[in-house]
Length: 275
Image (cartoon, rainbow, N blue to C red; front, side, top):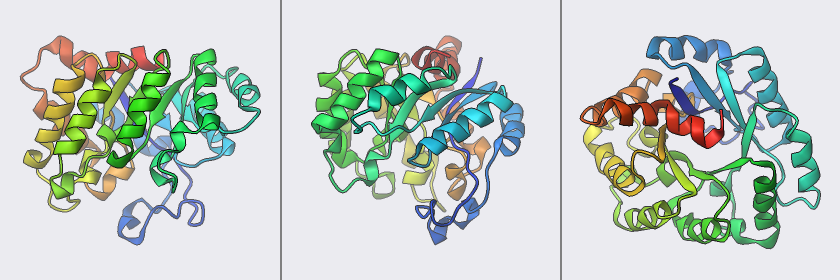
């Protein structure tokens, strides 16, 4: 089974979705399963993981509702207030929905850059482990040092870095990020999504040569057992069509074995998210 391990759905709300700037006008509209399904079929992708884009429990309910009506949605990464005193109660509630595989918080947007290391947040992540939920790390490179401490503190919790940890591809910055990613990869409980690369590059003029050095770093560090393809659709549309996100991975991994390609395009996501 071939899986797109990272995409989003929303009914566009200009207030709630204020993160979508004017230069991202192409995604200022609704994106629902009916928009994605033909793209998956054309690409030979059998299923996807729907990831939260809004920080509310309503968002989690919305994604569960979509998944119940569309069998190609194989898993949901929702949102819950990990810092809440009743986080275990809320996780117990969401545990009844088998389609929910994990949770995410938009750490990249927090003014407190080390929020993930506060006692309340760590308590929430530890609670995920009790219910077998995964955790998606959405961060910027300046937060990788904090991530290293978090994943070391909770070695039994499954983590996945979204979008390669969002390296500054457009600026060509790689050295410090490379060192941090190598350190992250040493932890057996940490995976990495091959997603979001085009949006960290020059949206209008990115080339495969711009992205390849970053794929080199992640592939060498994590190996083919801990990386997985994700399109980041529809956010990717600001820089590339859905098919182009797949072509980047196809081109880069063309010399690899069919077994390794199967892992990257599905088996690793199936294992990580317990699909």
